[in-house]
Image (cartoon, rainbow, N blue to C red; front, side, top):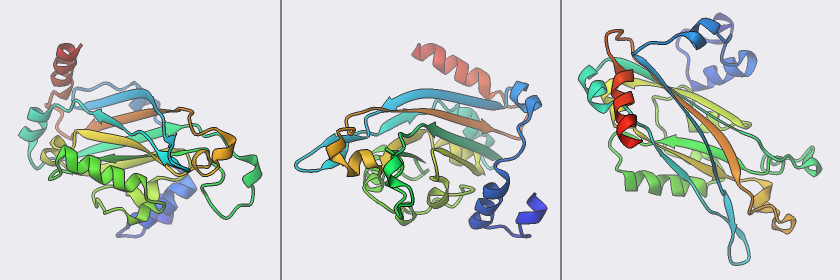
Length: 230
């Protein structure tokens, strides 16, 4: 499938075309059962209230900020070693049957959720400000680009399962420990007369990181940090 859909030097739109035809590949039972100290997966089940009633209109209401317990010292020690972070955001929408054949993608889903990750030179307040601005944008393609993602914000927010892969240095990943889940447009917001805007949006979030260094023990570092938090 890669040979059929990817050129010698693929760009983001080529990966979009590949995923549209083949998905993200064949699931691997061996990978699912595999356990290693240089690979971590965080699973989050949560919810937010995407909309609220304002003065004569429906506005966005909440975002969720997830502090990811990266083993920062261990990642920084790897410096320029390449690491991979995979993020999957999954949720259900309430379909709008009356919107069949509509030209607008916002008429079918009740709500849309998106995710973004803090960038290395970005402070927490700057990150929250950027996400707040993105939540008010109708077109995700207008957001500033973060080039190390396989798909990027313009392509990954399709449907109700959003997945993307980031690849970069371990030192870069160490400073990306904050992820936001925030609402996009949907008919719960654009059709206030139906009184659905006050409902919660539940979602599942899966974040995994993987390093090529087999001797690096990321698991124990995170396990110790979580024990302190508990």
